[in-house]
Length: 573
Image 1 (tube, rainbow, N blue to C red):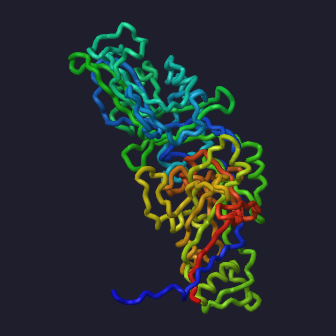
Image 2: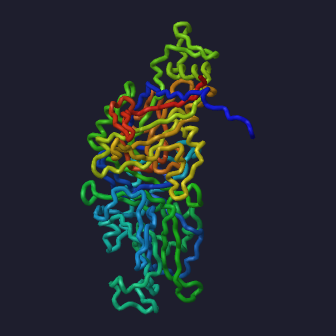
Image 3: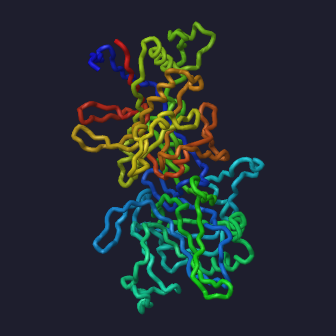
């Protein structure tokens, strides 16, 4: 434009560290786990936190109501396929595709465990009769005992292949469907039946599938339960069908104590098919397929109610740490774990110090000049006074968590790739979560990178990795608190900390109100936690604000590893 630029010599950058952070950890006990977007299945032993077992039950629906079954149907086969989350890494010269599994914990093809599937006879309700059917039914992680009395007696995944039941393991191998003659016999490329039915190398690959759970289910059960009963009208619509056939129960059991692996699964993507032959009007017997579906998806028509049941046996150290946590004084270590694990809470400003009061003009006066304290922490009053009187502007606010290396550097501990912070005062995401539109096209779990929470390496002065940390930018949240236009945030600021399975899911799950030890903070019962925390079995240990640990960074600076909230201001000079 031809005009001069104003230099920045009229402004200084000020860094303020909030001194009176107080944080503590609390066990969640059982939590709501029905109709989760992602469900866990399997066994995972964390070297620090203990052993978790995840069972699953789901209703089953018809993909199409009132399907045509025909006359004298005869079942050929029944299978269930649930894909793992995976990424194609490469393809060999022979055409085999090599995959890397995602969201599988404790992965080891030698870590075998029992996976048994039974008919579920318990009807999983949509609505809660105790509220006169006015609210959705809630089921909790510890509720398997209500299902067990209604469990079927027949093992449905009864294949002679023990890798599908008594010696189940999670594999990253792609799955092949081979060409058959329609009667279950393998054929060559010309359609002739192979003389050697057991030689896999002679079979012709008809279809390839990404790695996943593949279960051949019991033909006789589905012949009697589904095909033979079709004439009675039980397949007319899903309301009738779901009351008649109430779903499948997936149970896991250790073979060797603590051994196994756990997969996070989207059961709404499952492929569940009954393949049979029947005739229509006396015609030829033709091959047909009845497609079923399971799992719950809020974004599609798949609404099969499901529940994830979790059994977590805490390690002695983890249990002792939670029992020793102190809300009054705060802790030097924070313990967060997904599932029915634990949360951490941070009181950002200490309400115990309430000796000052902020006037409308921005002046600070002693509470001895007023009839009673203003119920605003003094640190918050001081910052608000500087905002008004000295025209400070908030540039940025960061909350940084360092992992406790002496615990988390132990062998084989899998650290969460992301943790999550939320407004625990109002049980909702903080404003910076909403204001970050950033996306990652290659990995949606890495969306909202500006908001933060992704794991990052910590390096010492030699460039060696000595640990990890998680950082958050909460600038808008702090800015609105200091501007003080919303008096509902006029006392203490409480932030919750959890692990997360997906940063894109920000809804809440209920904490079971029948827990023996509900979460109570300053007399208030905590009712919710982030639902994405329920979906992740991992945990981590973080330094609290009273930690004295330090390290020397790559620039030679001594850096405290304690939990810190730093606010950067621009102020006129």
